[in-house]
Length: 113
Image 1: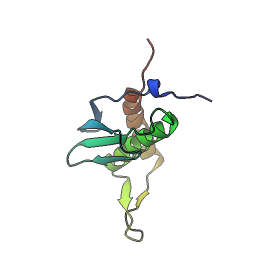
Image 2: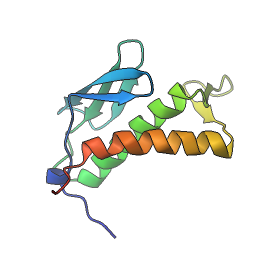
Image 3: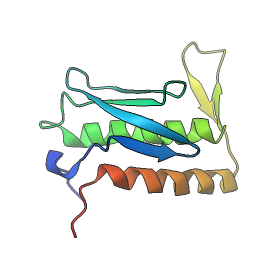
Image 4: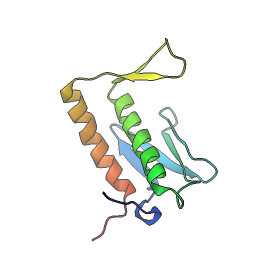
């Protein structure tokens, strides 16, 4: 098992996801995450960064993957459940999403030379 420390996580100012460049913001008062594709804004809550970096890492992963799924048009609104989404894709679409995700997520890691 790999243990992630808060010092291992970095926050780039911008990330390119598909055809869009997102400005990355942190919110020290929040533990959640959100994105706005119209404003090209990704926000990650960092209130728990020092005490629970694994949680913050999971929020980063969640938001990046959701942006990728939305960009690849495999995330769908579910009118039967307010405020919820469904994800549906072929294996090839999944491969394309993982490829895009992998290019982005490494930008949030402090890599050793």
